[in-house]
Length: 116
Image 1 (cartoon, rainbow, N blue to C red):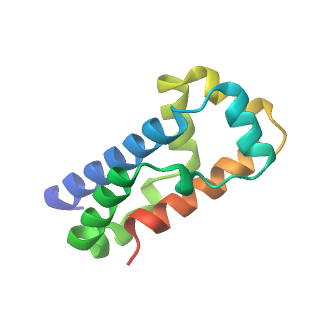
Image 2 (image 1 turned 30 degrees about the vertical axis):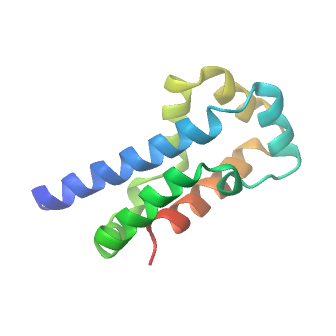
Image 3 (image 1 turned 135 degrees about the vertical axis):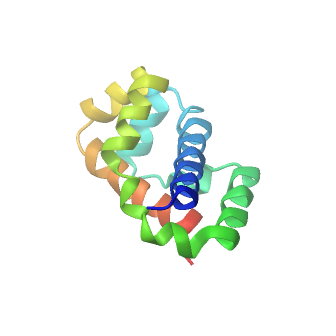
């Protein structure tokens, strides 16, 4: 991976982490539990400004990102949540279906923000 590619991947990771913090961070543990149980889509709760940042990134770097999209994994997202929102991380792990719910959300976020 070139230095430029590495830089782009770091930007992509930062965008996804920002998305998770702005979107999931607005939930209380009770609201996150309800979202998991009801299979609520996080993308619909995403602030428009953050969606627009993702679209701009996609226009500029989408084809490059696709080469490295495997770097953004559910495990990585969960590690961020453990650091940034430990109460929400625990809710995800303790709620039946939470692990599969977050995995589906991560894949959707990657498609919405990065894929062409």
